[in-house]
Image (cartoon, rainbow, N blue to C red; front, side, top):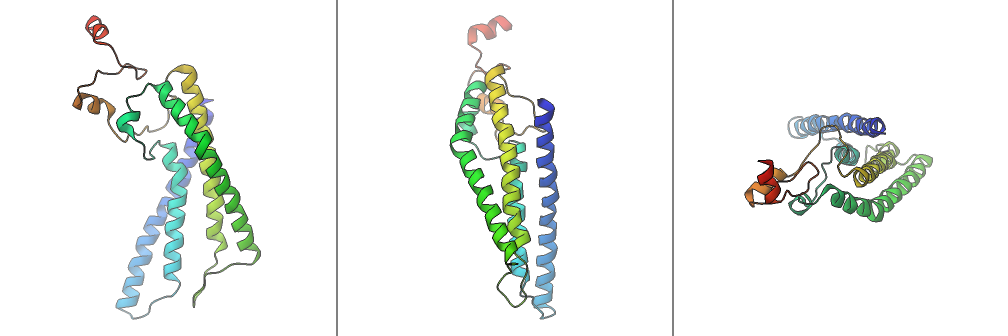
Length: 206
């Protein structure tokens, strides 16, 4: 099971790193257009649309990658103090109530948008039109990858509820260093399962 979870993590990472090159393409495209517009006095009508599509693809395809690294925004100030089972319970409820319905709707609607655009060979509205259907295909693709990664995270929540600790993942990410935060607020240290160690036990362990 762990190998399956990590394989999906690697798939999300691969797509995320692939589309990260869109940032390089954006930089080169914008630099070239600025030079062309202000130095050569030859602007291009299609560049703005290309910029929007590149940025949109970069943004959409970063979702599954970020989720695989546990890097989405979370209120770690409170969440980091909870026991792993409590964290898993909160995550599981939120995944089932909000994540799954939203991402399924995104994927389903995105596939319909892509099919409609492909059927009419939809293009942008400017002097030099660009095809829109390849860009619209990014919507269901990103949704499907995010849905797959979300199902992996749901399995991780179930495993944590069963075992009392989070399964390992590649390159774990913490938005906040919980140990440093505990030290700052003078909170008791946590054990291996995230539970707070009572002072009497800490003295015995010493």
